[in-house]
Every structure is written in structure tokens, then in C-alpha cells.
Length: 282
Image (tube, rainbow, N blue to C red; front, side, top):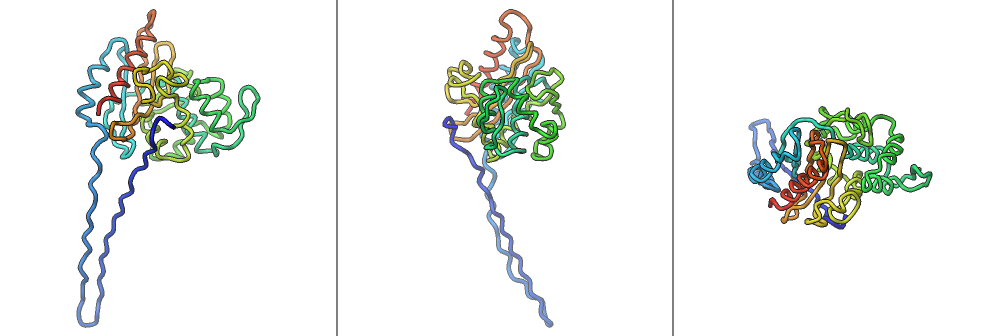
């Protein structure tokens, strides 16, 4: 995770002491201790500023007529932008699979790869995410005692998966559905959860590695993100830092991309334009 500095949310301690003592003749009350409560930090990015920047970009015809975006402040969990809706996540579904694995098993346990080699879970998951290896994801998913979403509902009750259905752990099924908010919220939770460190660390880096090596190349090292592609579907879910060092998670899902020569590449460029605008929206 050389691309980012780890962010840990500051804990706010609240103290309220009220002491009362009663006597046979009278009741004596001690004064209450006044507590100064720190106000919550301002949003990492102004929601109004985001709307002005992102709204026009989402209407790009290269993305089709079914596109969604969510942006989450990692430190506070505040939803900064959300179009709503559910979409086909394509390979970004691997994030749910990876999170379920890491919350079920220690990242250092040995696992057998599709080639029959023995490596630790964190290393293999990182490779699967970086390369978007569908077969490798399915091999790892077989380790789970239950489907990924069932494991996550138990292990991450704060994550709303009411709109998420993952039938294929690699993201190949068009029956898979999720909301941009669920993906962005998962990444926000992962950033702050040591058990999910390998999920964040395994994300490809814009302009530098994996499936992001040629994506958002004008912002090298600025984005950690998982790509997703099916015919007519393009997705991107990741994390970036503002100029003030605040981490922000996002998810862009488009599942009605025009199927035409060069349609996928045009949609990717449109999505990268949105991601770049997010990085610079602070």
C-alpha cells in the first residue's frame, strides 16, 4: 500500500459524571462535569461540489442509460454521492468474495492455487484481484462454507447488502446485482479493518499495476481500484486520497454500455474520466 498512507479514524471519548449523595436530613447534589464534544470532521469532499462535477460526466452517452455512482468518506462512513439503483457488478464482485474469505480465514493460511501451488491466502487473493483471474477467484471461493454474501452479512452487519445478489463469485454472471453504495461502503470498511488489509493491498494501482496499469494513466499511483468488464458492462470500484490526506471510496457501475465497435474502450475512458475528476475534486 505504498500508494497511500493508512488512515485511522480518531476516537472521540465522551465522559459524563453525575454524582449524587443522599443523607438522612437532605439530598446533596454534586455539580455535573461539562463535556466538550468535538464536532464531526467536515466531509472529505463537498457533496455539492461533487454533484456539479460528476452529474455532467454521468450523462456521457458512452456509458449508456444505466449507470450508477456512489462516493463514501472512509473516515466517517458518510455517503457523499449516491445515484441509487442496482447494477451488474462484473468482476468488482470479486471484492465481496475476497472480503468474505479474509473475514473467514487468516490471510496467512496456505491455500492451493489453480495451478496446484501452495501460497498464503493474502498473496493469492492479491494476485487474483490484480489480474482479475476468474478461475482463481472460483477456486478460492470454494473454501467458503457459505456464499460470500451470507458470510459478509454475519461478519460485517454494518454493511447493507439488501440489494446485493452474488451468484458467481468471480463476477461472470449477469444475475449478480449490487448497488454502487454497497461496493463503496465495503471498501471504506476494508480500509479501516486490519482483517481486510489484504483486500485493499491487492487492488491494482492506476497507471502502475494489474488491470489498472493502463487505466487513469494521467493519475499514476492515485487510485487503488478493481475493474470489471462484461459485454455491455463496465465497472470500477476503488479508493483514493484527497489533497488533505482523507481517504475516499467510490464505485462506478454501468451495465447498458452500447455494444458497438470500440464501445468497451469508450466506456472505460468515460469511467476513467469520472475517477480522475473525483481525485481532483478537492
